[in-house]
Length: 85
Length: 166
Image (cartoon, each protein chain N blue to C red):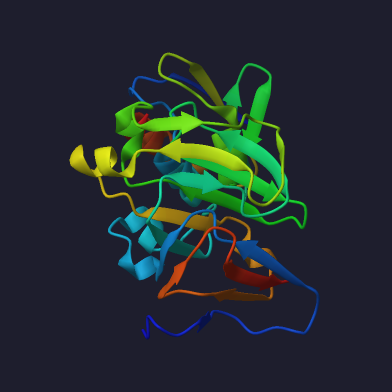
């Protein structure tokens, strides 16, 4: 299990486009990936769930990875998060 | 692709059909005509676009508002039949920060076809330099055996736009 925390810096937070990018990338891995804040977590492979979280600029987001390819998934997702969020 | 034909994306067994109605007046186009790879490549599900003729978005199904952005440029809906839809008004319109959009619904609202969800000022959005084409994505299209999209035609609100079978 990998836990990652990140404070969102981009002005518009997670709107449709970053939600799509996250979901697409997360779907490349078999491990469970959850994304969210505090106690509100979403399946990172489900764009509808990600959009429902409404992570905004300044929010501390939390991402968890759990499964056999969690190291690879975390590497890839964290790069994407740093670039787009 | 013949833009005046209807496009059969998959073929499946005969079962109860589900219909998604047009959420706005306009011209329905295929994903390939949306000038944005995020939508054009359809990687999160079957996608079509509407070139809007009017200034409002109404509910295309009976269902629930899953998520509506304060900025009014996008919303997601889960239909009573289990179809997950995203409607995104214009490209990069998040950058308008709500200007020219007015929302008439909130997260969790129960909706029926024709309910007013969002009003937008199409001409002002275009004047501000944005493409108003409105991608509509079926996020869980993999759950349906057959999806028929009616592209290349003018629609009015609540005309048939997509047919699906489980």
